[in-house]
Image (cartoon, rainbow, N blue to C red):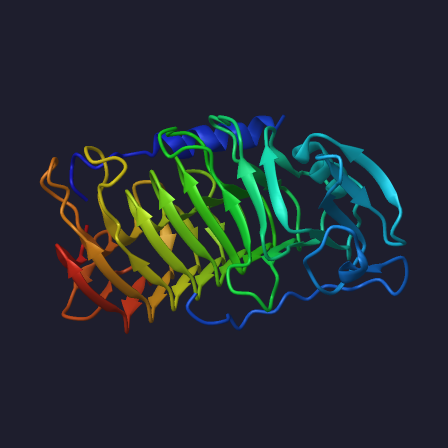
Length: 355
């Protein structure tokens, strides 16, 4: 690894600190969320005042006629309303139980406070086509949407609409704010979602097992697109698949500590110096073992292109990096069971690198 490559991601450290102290497309993927839909107390979203979404849901957040937001129950009655979108979404989450299918209807929801949970598991949260969760203030070291120490969550856009839901950031000039984080989670999924415009790692997964990013578009980030693990907080059995990762200034898909994880059938493009020209590596996919051990990581059937050299630092622009690996013409592997095979890498400063 180049000596002037940062040895630890400052923004990742800040995210981990916030996680410890608490919080205040190319084709349809093969993975299917397995959740139980309760047999009673549900409502069909098409009959709801919010518009958008199709299916049967337990709790529904929708824009209200007075310019605020309402939370509706399974029988169609209004539980509560608020002028603040984060308040109403967090109320929906807190009133959910394992097996709930919840919906956020179409509309733009300005998010002024962090949303998420550290106590409710087993929820499927669907963003209807046209639903945008828009970060509206500077969250600094806190992710906008954080799941912590929970399991069996699914956050998804409508399954029949490609990249239907949107999670959008406040500013790429803030080096601390991240989009969505899974911390200490088990079997959580984000899929069919467009995540964009964050100043740190767009999706940050740490200390988690069996989590998946599937069929998402992840774009415009100051640091990494999707990041697995960090020193002392590694991931295991996690996957990014069937996703489009574009315009991230450091690394498109990255891991700093993990075991038995994989990046499968993604397109990673335009990892460049658009946002942060002086400090970043411009790598497409990377395993960075300066964060901790990485073992049995599979990088397969990805397309990686347009990773230019960092002209200010004079290095970078690597398509796929496995630290201490031995590159060949179309693959790279090391002695820790990490391997990159059957990838199509082109238009990079260096297609494959041992780091």
